[in-house]
Length: 402
Ligand SMILES: Cc1cc2nc3c(=O)[nH]c(=O)nc-3n(C[C@H](O)[C@H](O)[C@H](O)COP(=O)(O)OP(=O)(O)OC[C@H]3O[C@@H](n4cnc5c(N)ncnc54)[C@H](O)[C@@H]3O)c2cc1C
Image (cartoon, rainbow, N blue to C red; front, side):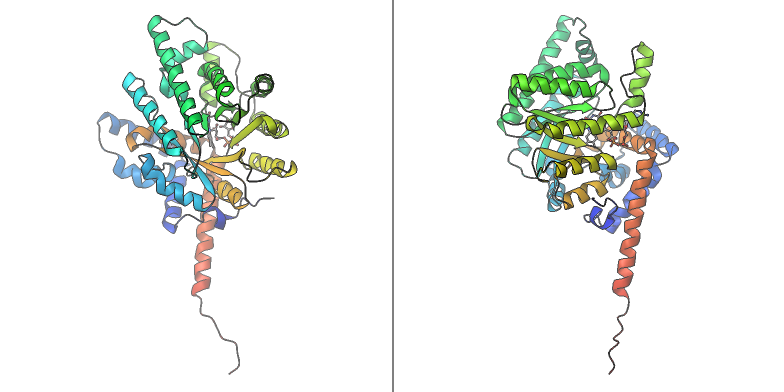
């Protein structure tokens, strides 16, 4: 059994100053009013075009973001590699819908694939489909609503960009994760990702689809995918997450009067997630798998399954993944035990990455148990280091009789 409470291993890479900063941050964002105030502050400073970098860069940005550009993130990837943790660089630009924004984001996704080529520090590349087209067009396409000529043109360009990213990943022998997003876009994203897997995953998984296991229909979709992979002879790239948009999804289902797509309870989501892990390991010949979770129990389930089925811990088909700045106790202890681990590292200039940072803060407030756990571990490690230092500095008495 892995000891996820081993804080010495968990924070091996962190200086005392890093720990103090993390303690301060997690202490602050556990309060809803702090996060709300932060949101208002960010909104006002953006409206007035005031610089916020001086405040955010040494604090929340440093905790959760790798840097402004891929090259600036290189030292971080090298440092993680020392602890057998690989990186995934996630260009975190959200919300830009103009043709220029879309093109810029696409160009950056392409750069990240070039950066990953032959780079042993990088485990996967990743992109968000919604960054490649407007929400309106993707939502209509997903609901199979007739597009206007102009919308059809935009949708065709989106498909072309999506395929270009997958093809470049294939040509560079780099794996590419397709992030999952809101329910209203997901059918169209799934359909296209399936096409890409049929095309590029013949020998190994290059393209990875993402299943949000808070959706109660995802286990049956997983079985459907498996049957499709048998029929069409390809390897499924499977990224599991629980899902990030629960409140929004429940609200939207109520508003538009369709059945809530999310499991009724947290326990049902947990069971779904762990059943997905079982299913894939039991059919591993047809899969490569990425498990993106901060849930301790799910990480234990996967580690035990790997051992039970005599799969090598460093078998490159299976990776554990956590977000940069969170759950180091899982990442570092899993890597220490020889499992494959990777961190999702967002990168972008401060201004661009703000929506991501707000989501991280909100998530940490919402999942109160997780923030409390982060804090408790950080405090334990600070205390452990103090005790260790005291013991080192204590005078050594020579008991030998002269
Ligand atoms: C490496 C990585 C990549 C990610 N990529 C994506 C992505 O592409 N798309 C995406 O949507 N998210 C993504 N996420 C976020 C993820 O979906 C979760 O929101 C987040 O990780 C918290 O879930 P957990 O499994 O870590 O932990 P936990 O704290 O155990 O689970 C919290 C999650 O459980 C579910 N949940 C909570 N309460 C209930 C309830 N009452 N009923 C039903 N379900 C409930 C929700 O999904 C919630 O986020 C990613 C996370 C990681 C670590």
